[in-house]
Image (cartoon, rainbow, N blue to C red; front, side, top):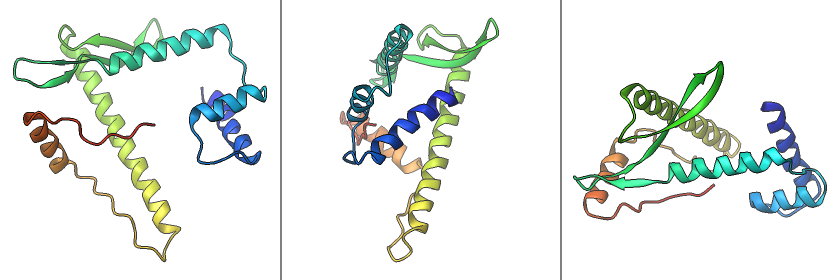
Length: 164
């Protein structure tokens, strides 16, 4: 997969090297790459896209419990099946403990990884702008989680969201 990712990263580089406008949306870069003949869909691409859409829909399915808590209904856990590493999805209301413990642990590791990368990115940005006031990033989310829970109890669980 990293080889394919390198190909896709090369498309981003070709896009900027061609003097195309930045910042750019992923759709603008994808359309440009397609028009330039840098990417052509294969039949398996449609299945992979559909699978990604299924996963996105599963990730965005929420329910509300008897206590009024809005919870995510479906959770993936990376597991081995027939020697192949796969993300297997299960419904939180019927999943066994092993699946959910694995899913929660993997999700936590993903959050930690995101935080580590965010810190690296902020440090890099700050180091390259010594004349500017450094951007501060607090990695203790205790107050953020408490505030979000309080907002949810008040019926306002919108919060801030950034789309990629």
